[in-house]
Amino acid sequence: MRLGALVPAIPLELVSSLESLGVKTDMDLLFGLSDLEILQKLPPGTTTLKELRKYISLIAELSSAKGCSASQLLPQTTYCNLDSHCIRLDAILGGGFRPSYVYEVSGDRQSGKSTLVLNVALRALVDDPESDVVYIDTTGDFSAERAAQILASFNLAEKTIANALERLQIALAVDLETVQQVLQVVIHRLSTSLTPPRTRCLVIDTITPLLGPYLSSTSTQGHAIMISFMRHLRSIARAYSVAIFVVNNATGIPGSQPNPLSVFPDMVKKPALGASFPYLTDATLWLTSLGSGDAYRVEVLRSKISQTNAWCEIVMEHGALLPEKVVHERTDEG
Image (cartoon, helix red, strand yellow):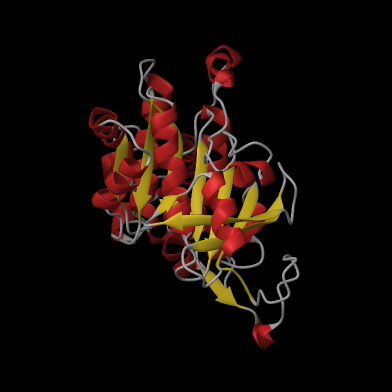
C-alpha cells in the first residue's frame, strides 16, 4: 500500500519526506531501514523518534487484514467447498477446494496450472450466483474470450454466462505494491458490504514475478517481505472465508535429482520461490502435462488439509476441465 493512501492518518509532510528517501510503501517502511536509520536521513525537525515509531505502528495496523467478530463469521460458515466438477480431483482434495485456505498451484510451462485455476474460479461463479471472483493478473495474459469459451463449454444459457462474466473481476497488477492496493479494496468490500455478490475466490496468476525479484541469497529482507505478504493472504482467507489460489512457476533441481516431495521419480523440478514457500500456503498442487493430447496429472505435494501425495489424472480440452466420465474414457485410451 502506498503511504500516500494513508493521509491524513499519517501527516502529509512526513509521507513526502519518506517518499523522498525512497520509502513509498508500507513494505518499504516495515521491512527496509530501521526507525533510527530513517530518522537520521529525514530533514531535521520532521518528526521525533517516538512519533516515528508511533506512525510505523499505525501503518502496520492500517495495512493489515482486519479482524472480525464471531457474529460476522457465522453467516460465512455455510459456504461450501469450491467444486471443480471433476470427481477424482475433488476427491484427492478431500471434497474440493475449501474456503479459508491458500492453495499454491505450481507446474512447468504448459502444465495447465493457470487453466485449472481458471476453471475452478468459473465453476465457483456458476455454482454460487451471489459470489464473485477477484482474478489478479500479473503478466497481462488473462483472456476474457478464453473465460467465455470455457463457460460456454459448461452448456450454460447465454444469460448465465454473461452474469458469471460480470462477476469475474479482473485486476492487472504487475508489482507487489499494486497487488497490495487491490487486496485493500477487496478487504474493504468484504468488511463493509452486506449485500451480494461476495468474494469467495481470489486468484493471483502468477505470484512468481511478484516475489521473485525480492529474493536474494545475500539478504533476508526479501524473504521477510515474502513471509509478510503470504501471511497477509492467509489472514484474508481465514477472516473472510475466501479460497485463495496463487499460481507459481517451476524451477530445476540441481543435478536433475528427483523431487523428494513427489511420488514420481521422473519429476526433476520443484515450485519456484525457494524451499520455504510451500510452507507459507495450506496446500501445494503440482501439475504435469502428460504429453498426450490434453491429459494432465495433478499431485498434492504437501497439504495441511488433505492427503499428501494423492494424485489423479485429468483432461482439459480446449481449456475446459472435462467431467469425470470423459476423463475415464480418455485416460483409459491413453
